[in-house]
Image (cartoon, rainbow, N blue to C red):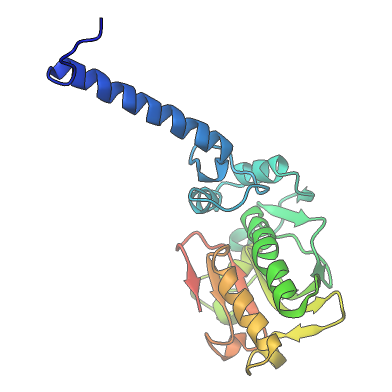
Amino acid sequence: MISRRIGRFAGDRRLALLLIAAGLLLTGRVWLAEHPEHDPWAPLDLRDPPGWATETKLIALREDAPACRAVLERSAIAHDVLEPAGEGACRREDRTRLTDYPLSPNTPPVTCPASIALLLWERDVLKPTAHDIFGSEIARIEHLGAYSCRRLYGRDSGAWSEHATANAIDVAGFVLADGTRISVLRDWSGEGDKAQFLRTVRDGACSSFATVLSPDYNAAHADHFHLDMSPRWRGVCR
């Protein structure tokens, strides 16, 4: 028999609260199962939309190449894993090449975290921005290279560049499916569609890459975007 005085006794109140909590927990678990992008314990799958837990999962991959490659496999991303190369500070243990990505003049191997950042940038920023502004698709992403065994700005001493391990890539421009060419060097300044496109995709890159440097940063970046996945900080966007 249900007590007519339910709520008047501590035991009744505790039971009611326990049942409510259990119901909320069950509802939450079902909801997370349907929305793994918000579940911090669900394996990352790049086919899922960005969610509350996505950034934390991506940051965790920066220094974990095996886990990163598992994400590429799980997400059915076409890629090659190449043998390590180089020596000393320029030793590249992680050499991952995307085999279906529109880089030009070639698709160089970069680190797995940089590969994932490139994929997300293309999907979530480049494609929708090109469609919104130009009504066209991205045909090619023109780059100036990924690997370069050097210190920052080519100095004789100091910190090594992220390019030394191909954890970075320099993007110089874009070619759309309709033939439109967009150059960082020529089109950054101004108020036209090309300048708007470049500034939008620069800002959007900051959601995927640890470091984004553009012509706004200094003269050394007047002709390209520097994009890298340095584990040293959470995000630099200039």
